[in-house]
Length: 372
Image (cartoon, rainbow, N blue to C red):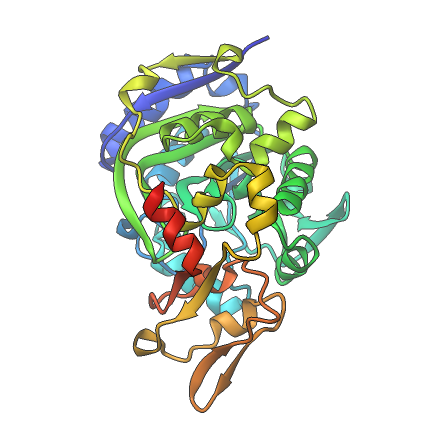
């Protein structure tokens, strides 16, 4: 059977128009009752990476979350809203919820705002206990680029189900994008959402997924219950081939998808109306354009690495606490990266709210970038 997705245009976050677009998308797939039983408990998990304002397009927009809540209220659901952002201290999480506009939404809509601070182990993952306490799980990813995984979409959003600092351990255990993507597919199979709703109204291009990315009005909502098919479509909308995304490659190896449009039925608006020929890809996407045999020979010479922009740095220490290799420290009142330990996961760039960490390229990477 073909996987069914609904793709609907929506260009801003006006609640009335947003609700109509979301309702249309869900109804195209048979209505909310086709995915969620009335009067059930539902976990709603957006992408809340860091304490960013909604207009920065780093986090799922609060008005989309509100629209989802309104639809669930229509079938008398008990709703739990939360995420595990890159910082896991209670004070940091409170700041994330406040800055992202989620605390305001929860208060106005009278729903419970939760912290993912009590894990339940599932297939070697310490995941939020609310997966067990709730009957259904809805994932609300933000459509963004990512310097480590190229795309953060339906599959990558599930990484936020992992509680607290164990995310650091997973980065240490799976230091390259291929192995990390295998872990993400394991996670997807462990905690597959009952419904995924992608915030593609404003996306983030270039060196996402955080402050070095550039907001872009891509103008759509994408809905379905097949996360791999969703990421296939998101790859195409970035101007990439589906197999350029490491998690898609791994899904194909496991026969979860053959990454073909022929196996995906898109309801609603025309996919080709949303294709972005000028979508700015992350710096590291250059590696996907190099044939594997050549890349194996030149891998040590084609490098991308984080570099501190000291004039922007506040010495807040977020990058130090998140680094899985403990390769970052303060020396002489400046942040210092030990590159002999760095695994180029770019977690430090993800958590930096001051645009103080940039991506640098080796000389050969620069030359290849000019030639591509």
